[in-house]
Length: 302
Image 1: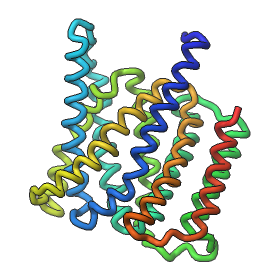
Image 2: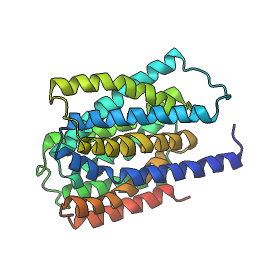
Image 3: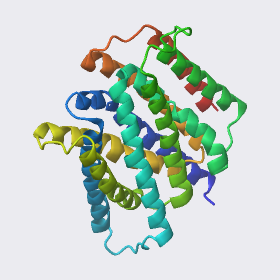
Image 4: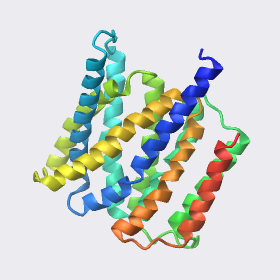
């Protein structure tokens, strides 16, 4: 059992890793929409998965080269199987669902709706990780969710059919897949080096992703723009942020509370959506983000 000082250091490191991951994820909505202007969701998933798999392999090899004499136990069959199942869940299923939602919805709608996975994760952490949320944290979760609803409906609660219904369903489904992926990964794989398990998961996912793309959209034509979006999506969304966020979850004892920090990302992301994509950000976004930040304060304050 860690000492109080060690636990405090771990929580501090987890917070730093989580905030960096959130900053990277803030650019992803813009990257998705720009990429979907030129490629199909499946083609973008395939490009990103290839780039991220290469990244994980390099990270693992670099780590071993820095500590060549440090013994590392090989993954057991059960751990390999768990990593493979998680790979089918994400990136295979999750990113097909998420990018299809982005293809059907405006970025300022798809992005905050997808980010409600933090609420899903906070609730799922109770049965999966046996963690608990105190009443103040529950209040923060509820207030954050109210803010997201305001953002999605643009303040008009009498009109819920202005956006593509299938796109909304897919965005909501993505929150369940994403939260389940992280919580199951922590439960099944514990403190194993994330780079080792992600190599397995993403390598397993590459074949079904490639087959699905070949049978539906067709393989994308190689170009520097494809490489650029592969790096953007694969390294920022699937690569660097993946490792940082998974490491944060391994270090923290408050996964549900840490997940609420994810609501900081829409604030920066909406700025990019408005300035880069040119979407008119509705005034209700200001009210919604105020509610979200208030929810964050209630959840994180001790």
